[in-house]
Image (cartoon, rainbow, N blue to C red):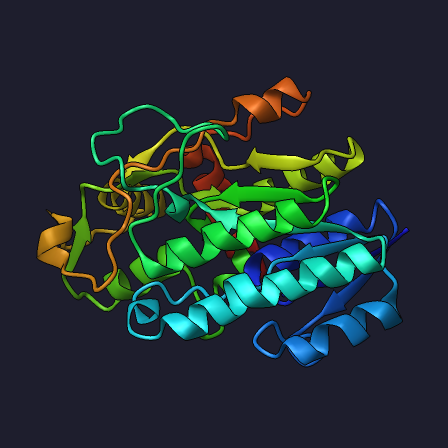
Length: 290
């Protein structure tokens, strides 16, 4: 079995590739091989590769910037994904596509985990572009798999320019700068290693359709920051603020905890609680940097 992975050098891709190797030959791909923003690169590359499974970890994920350049977000997350889904269908390849909890948010009074049947309602351009990307993947072939996840962080983001929320908090705290972190947005920060493990198990079961894959439980970004510092033994000048006070250009979902009940119904254990996953991340990060 040949499995192509686009975005293989990203946080999720770097954790996925070694785990997917248990299923067959893994072909890591970067934007140099396939650029979703340039549709003409897609079909020829897939026709040449002829993969059995194509995993798409690539996306336009500049959430705030998308509000002023929606064409760029839709070019990658919708139109590029549509071309990818069409090319995979032509090559008879299963497409595995990652989406986001940002497809929700319109139901501001929500306080219960969202399952796969919950009506989406994006509140940002980014969220809308990802939702339409989901639709085109699922419409292209019934055997395709869409995985929604949330708040990803992985050790491959502990360096480089991309980083992740955990690394940002640690860096600023060590600089002694004050931190003002939003305390009215609830979600589930998820460790890429755990998301990768569940993804492989879904493929082993030949799962299709839509699944939510996150760690378990929920917290605000402020609560996550506080736990990062507690587990790291760092003292930080940390203050909770509201989303309105933070003033981000793009609106975020006020509550977007995703239910993983469908995952467990397919015999895949619910990924560990987010605080336990964070501890594992910090340990792995320390081991890599020592």
